[in-house]
Length: 481
Image (cartoon, rainbow, N blue to C red; front, side, top):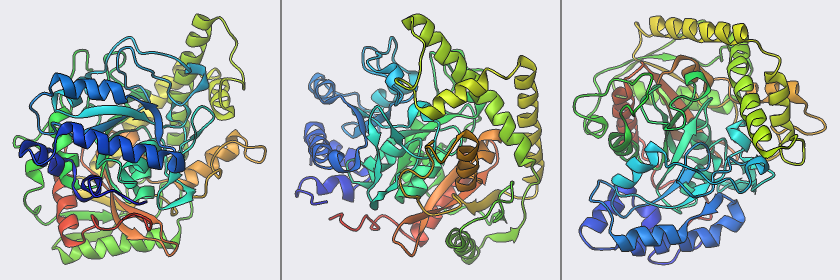
């Protein structure tokens, strides 16, 4: 992936570093935007991470003059899923929403722009964010810059592929079952899912999938993730709840090592499904690194009913998907079929129509019980360490519905690939994937830490300590120069 001399700034500086260059007038916001657009034009045909281009809107924002914020002049991409700019396309990776234009601008988008980010496009996602791979019939397959035959992860695969390819140092992402941490692990990035209620999701809806979904970012550096959270967290009008914030901010938490932490090492998923030995060894090596830094690690895990929680997830997600599809179908006056919806989405909707209101109430009770179980377990521990995923990044096409993979088989395959990430979505806790290992095949492997509700500060402090002890900034895809 050959870079021009100017473009190297995008891969050698994180977002805070780029903002500092703009403040010192060593580069302009317009020059950074041109670099990002040029790199997009060269690399998107290969990795397919862009859902929409907003080049002229971005150039107009720079010409008008940008706000004075912590990221003034830094190029930024939004994930094309439930994150809107009034008048611009919001298609959610779906042919069913082809040409759909947003009527409002998301609160989070307004906070990004107040922070000085320059939004020049939206990244790819699987239809409605439903899978762990970013493959859809509207935009095509998103590929991993480490190996284009493999997935970039999902549902924030476009964001992760763009950052891993050096188009920009950080990008917006969302996580309803692992969709920040999963692509971060696949693409060798840092990805933190915030506590429930930490980052705004409205104004159309301030909660996603019964509280399972959160918004934040995938980044190359820990400090970028922390500083972005400082710029965007806090309740919005209509919020049902909000997570407590540290008095000194999240970036401040990265500036010094954490106190000695008690860490539970969980190597077996709640469902007991198999885990690739490389992922287990990566987590064990992370545990040894933590011990060398003065932390205490011991084998332990909360006891959860994975089958009941999985069924509860479907009872929350599937009726919501069915309702959205039926409402849009009524407004369009059509009956949606495989010409506009993916087979898996149709299966989700059909499944969702079978649930009753009592099923959804029981599912909510299951989630609340799990949150209490995990919180009680974490009275003994500060963090839970596990593999992020049960295997290195899969080949494209492995976890989509196909003639040999029906809905039940898809659920089994997906659950076996992502058996660790969903716990934090069920319970609402913060959780991060840290890019500390590589597979024998040269693909990234993440290690995941889950913290107590509202305690992203401890996660950021440990992540920064790990980043200092075992830096990953210079680890780039093999063709990256």
